[in-house]
Image (cartoon, rainbow, N blue to C red; front, side, top):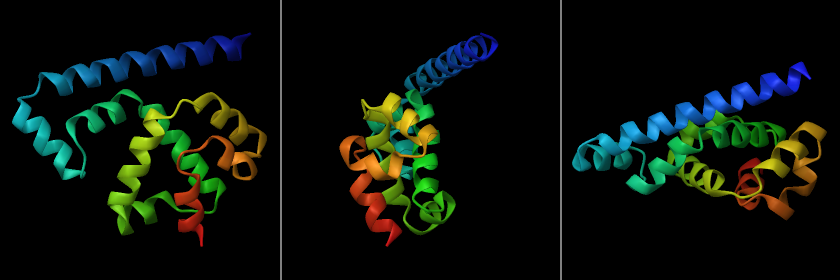
Length: 126
């Protein structure tokens, strides 16, 4: 019961933090928001999705590690690819399954069934 409560509290805090971050982004001058997004090769909408779904980045990094990929190395070598992957992950509707498969150790075997980045990660792992 304690773990469930801790998980709920953590998720609530993450949700509140993401809402605050999105609100802060939307309060920026539109040209500043565009410049920030462009620094990462993203649109403002893509950046807002990433900020709103920050938990997706954790899942994406866990999936990369499960495939033997170093997220920091990919970030340094292929920042645009990583940004595109992050946007896809933030918009993914299978986060629950992803989390479950990662916890079970079966994510890599079943990723093609649910992960929008499966093909890209497979190619990067080669």
